[in-house]
Image 1 (spheres, rainbow, N blue to C red):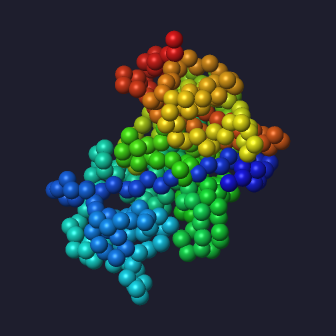
Image 2 (image 1 turned 135 degrees about the vertical axis):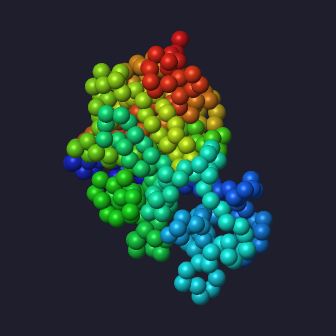
Image 3 (image 1 turned 180 degrees about the vertical axis):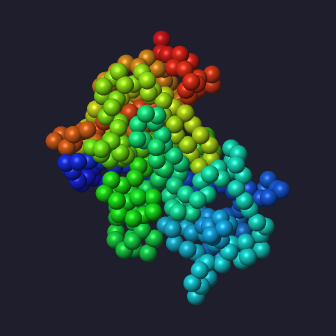
Length: 324
């Protein structure tokens, strides 16, 4: 996607990323057997062209399933998909509120919008929102309206109920993995939102440009639909949002090698507004928050944070490991 396509707005501007959908995990009642996907013709353990995503009825129970393009796989002539467990004669499943089951607090949000992947909060700011994942390229008939929308653009101007809202909703790159299996999560979760003048969405991130603000507000709270995580802000800077920049941070979610990881961190630190002293090293899970800084030169204000390590606590900054 060409970043230069982003509309310049006097009261708000936005940086765009993509988001990869997290598959909802399920477990069988009184049994540890995991949910088994089926092919569109109902054959167990067949090869799937698309990863299935559960869909839920008004009681929160799954029925049918939809493919990665959010199209129902249903028998010909059905106006509503048959319940998957009726069709395949499988036992009933329910959420399990532990590390491999979805937190029940997200049941209602998932019913409203299955793009919900968690919640983002920063104390003493207006950042306290449900987090959505961009659905990717949208075509009519997918449940997002009758227009074509390129990936990473839908929630620029839509709310959690998929209704038009100028300030949109915060969301993460569609290529990111923020699912239940931590080993498969992206090394760098990238989240974007509008820089609203009233401070909403990511408007309050600009408070950190007054570097004294950091020392009272160094932590970020990011929850997936499976568990809560805590992060400490490592650095923040102003960088280019142009497509021809030498630092396309929005394309750097999978930092699989130490070389890629170190380049990303050091590139942000090179232009950092404050040396926080927080240690960060290969193997840490990163979080990047991004919003627009100025329309005139298409710059972005980005905040880099890392997940807390064992022994660290948001109750005291003194517990945070410092670089030597």
